[in-house]
Image (cartoon, rainbow, N blue to C red; front, side, top):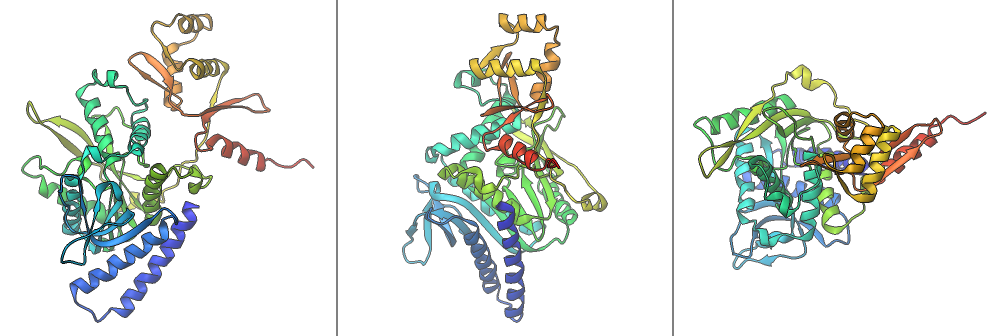
Length: 435
C-alpha cells in the first residue's frame, strides 16, 4: 500500500510542479512563489495522511510548550486538532504534543538553504520539553533502541551501570522519539544525489572549521532532506535503522539515496502515526523488504571537557558512478536454524533470559551437545533473534515464530507484523502445482 500511495504522490507532485511553472512563470514576487510551494507541500501531505484522525496540514504557524516558549514561524505543520489563534494576526499556534511533523519548504535547495532550514527546524528542539511526552514515545524509543543496538531496552537499574557511550545513545534515541518529525523539502536545487551530498558536506565543513559548533549534533539534524529526486535520511531506527558497528565511527547517522522521495516521506510520517494512534502495520502492506541507501556520514561521541561532550563526523565519499548504481531493497528472510538453536530459542521463549555464564542447565546443555557456546550465541545474535547484555541472553524478537518445512528444515523469525506469515504464504503460493 505504501508504495502505491507514494507513486501517486510522485505523479501528483510532477503534475503540480508543471502547473506552477506554467501559471506562475511571470511572477517574481518571492513571497508569492513561496506560497505556491508551501501550498503544494500541504496538498501533498493532506493526500498522504489518514482520514478520521483529526489530522490537518497548516501553513505559516508556530509551536509552543507549557512554559510559553515559541518556535520560529514554520512553513507547514502536520497537527492533530485545532490550534489557538494568535492575537491581531491570522496565525495559529499549536502545542508541541499535537504536532506530528514540521516541514520546511524551499523552491531551491542549495548549501545555504540547507543550513537555513536546519536553523529554522532547530527551534522545534528548543520548544520540546520532556513533560510533553506521550505513551507512544516509549514504544518508539524501545523499538529504535533494539534496531540500532541489537539489545532490549534496559531497565532503570541497568542504566545506572551504563558507559558514557551507552548513556549518550540511550538519551539521544529518547529525544528522537520525543521530538516531532523535521523534514526539509526542496523542489529544485541540486540535480543529483552527488551534488546534494557534496553541498551538504562542504557547508558542514565550513560551519565547523573552527571546532565544535552547538546545534550540529546528530539530534539536531532533520529526519529527512528531499531535493528533487534525491534524499538524505537520518538513521535513527524510526523507521530507518542501520545497526551500530564496531568501527571507530560506529554510528551511520545519515545516509542518502536517489529515487522514491515520497516513499521515504510516507514511511516517516506513517510510522509516527502508527505508533501514536495504534494503527495496524497492515498499512505498509505485506512487503517487508528492507530499503537500502548509500553510506553518507558516520559519527562518534567525543569528550570536550569534564562536563561537555561533542561529536566527530566522518564523510563517506562516493563517486557519481557509484551513486548511479540503482539501489535494490534487501528481501526479508527468516533464519534457518538447527535443533540446538531451536532448543535455546524455545527455552528463552519460556523463561525470558538465561545467564550464559552461570545458568547450570544452559551450561550442561552446551557441554552435553559439545557446542561452541560463543559461536552459537554469535550466530543467533547476528540473526537478530537474541541479544546478550551483561552475560544475560534474551529474545530480541517480540513475537518469535518457528516453521518446520516439508524438507526437514527449521526457520525462525519475527512475526510481530506478520513477517513470517507473509513470507511462508508467498512460498506456498509460488510452489509449482502438481500436474
